[in-house]
Length: 318
Image 1 (cartoon, rainbow, N blue to C red):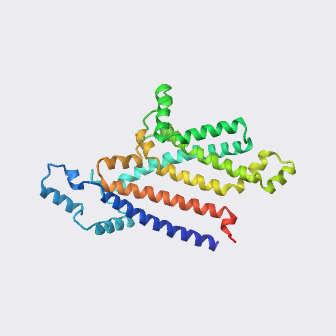
Image 2 (cartoon, rainbow, N blue to C red):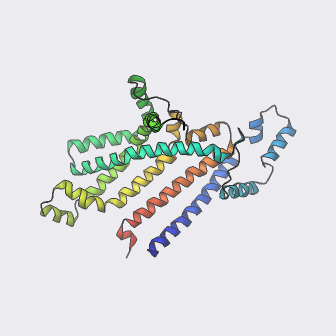
Image 3 (spheres, one colour):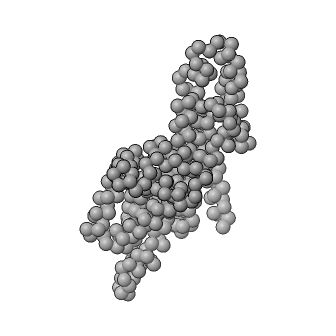
């Protein structure tokens, strides 16, 4: 138990160091953007005195390292600052958008994880059959296309041609749960088609690798059915790589939703990030980027810990 806690503490320290480096990259990346932020917001017709006063209000007249430490200190205290476009607290602005993004990611995960595991087990069970080849072709085709292409194809057929779902996922908290599910179905289906292939193929590969193990051959000699061997004996031992790829894909569902949210005009964190970039609302861009980075680091850390805990060879190395 103490070994697991030590490992988790080491991974947490590494995750915090990664976030510190990411915060430096985000801040310096924004600093390197061309043009003056105050002039861009006020316009070219603004008087120099007005621009100078605005720069002082935004603390742009301070040295870069002081602004970075001020920004980082605010984040550590839970203060993300105010939006430049509407002067609202960024935490208030982000909370609703983050909830929408999490709702979309959870819905995509609820569809994609059971579907990928089922298809992976069936593909291993009927290896090299027509079903196996067909599933692999469909999975590789869906993961080969970019998200926006998959999204527009779904909109064309399921929204425009057949009218089954709305093409714009304009949700709000006044809607009922099932109405939200209905409006979010198309973006969730897009994310599912993008991530299900990797999880399905990892499940299939891990199971096929284990089917050549001596204890599986012993189970075959005992006359156990193939489905029982896979579900009862092979699948539990293949959990480590499967959990890793599932958690990494869950990280993608939260962090990689920017394009999907823009296509469906979904009011999530990715849409807010794109809108803030177009308005040069730098504090909101920095806050959204840090939330995406923290989510990705945290889920990668979770995948790392779960992979070690579920694999005795990694938990007790010789």
